[in-house]
Image 1 (cartoon, rainbow, N blue to C red):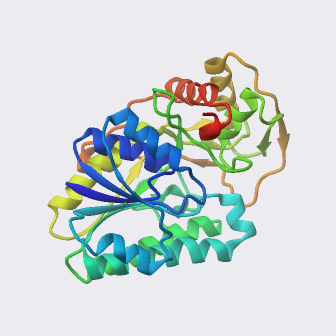
Image 2 (cartoon, rainbow, N blue to C red):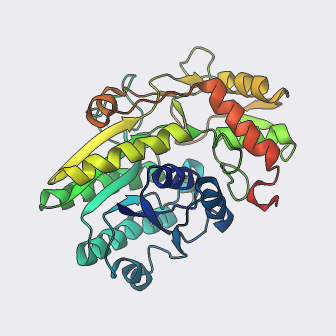
Length: 338
């Protein structure tokens, strides 16, 4: 099979490229490199001893995107491309709506014109907003507490409407908090500027690039007062996409929605402790105020992914932290270390 991967040079995209190539598929990658680096894909090719077809294309560039799809031969699309920082989305919401929603419209319009009609969408647990209970099942009410989450929610609705018109097969994968890195230490999370997510911030504090971690609030209704999240190893997440893309190809049409997580939540303070164990370094931190758009606790019920996709996350918190530290310690400046 030959798959198009949007945002394939990014953190989750690059790890999924590894697993798809390892499974024997051919891949075409489009990425505008706004928050990623071409070097990640060079390393994907080295890790798998296989080549991929890369195009530096922004999804909003409809002509360039159509040129990638027009020759045909693409069996399905895995759609990762999009801006993803909760805090930033609150500050610049219009940028998120334009990039994420308009970019997806551009993609599906090109797919509708040139094929294929099979899509795996990188959604998010943020579509559940502030959930009324945990663990979260796929039939929970949908809402959002920040513009980033609303872009994911709106895109899901667009894709459901699209599939209702017939002959589209779509998987909506709502995943929780991706962390870790490839066990080789060759690819990992390398955000531009100050990290917005916990694990890369922890890593950069431990390696000395940042002075300390700010913990956003310690007065939530959780065991230690800090936010609780379902952290999932990025390799497990990548394998979830491999599992999802085959059912997409086998179904005659419609939408399947699955949570991808571990079913277990860890607090910020628990993650700091685990990362300190893995790195052998104390991670200095300070308690700050709550961050707008954040919620107290969020972790998944993963029953549907197990039954529908035959997929289960297998890597625990210690492996997540150990792999993240291996990546950071071997690449102290990210992909610019070489």
